[in-house]
Amino acid sequence: MRAEAAPSFFLNDSPYPIREGVLEAYRELWQRFSQPGDSWSGAQRLAIAQETRDARNCDLCIRRKQQLSPYGLDESHVLTETGELIGATAVDSIHRIVTDPARLSRRMVEDARSSGLSDEQIVEMIGVACVTMAVDEHYRALGLDLEPLPEPVPGPPSGRRLSEDRLEVGTAYVPMLARDGAVGEEADLWSGRRTAIHILRALSLIPDALRDLTILSNEQYLTLEEAPAFALQPKGRAIDRLQMELLATRVSQVNECFY
Image (cartoon, rainbow, N blue to C red; front, side):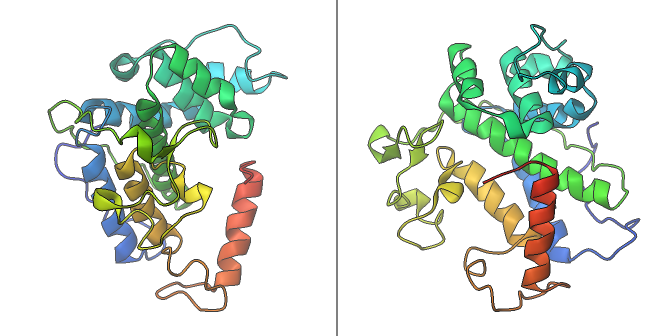
């Protein structure tokens, strides 16, 4: 579903008060999603977000998850109008990310590559899908209808690429910006640090995908500066740090999201 005007994210019907910083982050992310990215157009990025939502009710994904192997069924998704915008390979990858994350493997990335998706397209797709899921799950937890997706901003993707000499290849399924690679236009990515851990660098092949994740995690969790300070009470939070970590651990366990 697309919004006719700018997304509101006011959550006036929420049963609980929501920090304004959270709502501001959501508004910014929805605006960013509607614009052309480095590898996908605005319309395609919103199609990725819509497929992220549609995957939850996908019959093939439900049956596939019951199989001993995630590749146990030799079937393909029936593409919707939004699916046609991004293609069968992207749709299949998105649905696997949403419905069966515990069994993601290198094969998904290799299959996507062999079907014609670039590493940059894969990373940008994952970034949009993950942020969409996080925002939507917040709404579901509050018992609210999902925020409508915005209208896309016309225009092609920028085609921007990081130079190969700045990338680290082979450590992860996709290339990442090297530990000391956050310089120049990417100097903000590590929040001023000289290096970064893998989980922070995971989306760094598309710097704006990492920036999107940072906007989200700064409000749904903590800033990079606050994260190591376990003894300090995070500012503006209704629960303390130990409660936050207990909640995060339980959610990760239920979702079989292991790191």
